[in-house]
Length: 94
Figure 1 (cartoon, helix red, strand yellow):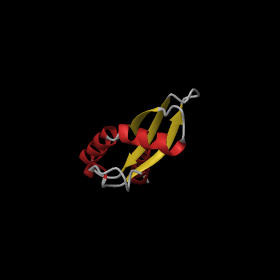
Figure 2 (cartoon, one colour):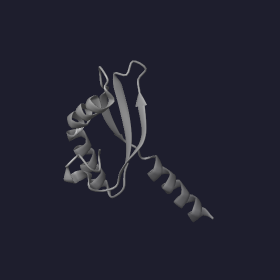
Figure 3 (spheres, one colour):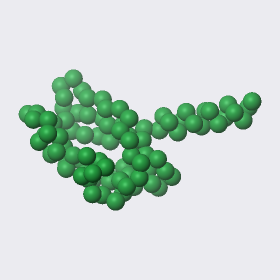
């Protein structure tokens, strides 16, 4: 859906859904995303994702045939960047 249907140019880069946490009552969903690129690219991608929330929820409602679709919160997942930084620091010390 993000690659083919959301027409926001800010999402043209590499945006990957890493993890989704849904509350037990299915009212809220945290969607962790990784965005490849510089800080400004990540910022723009997050703006695009937040702008597309309504469209995404509507499409999920249609496709999943659910009575209620969770509220969506996009969270930038920086774990990969953190791991790369640690790896670089370890290499520098070797």
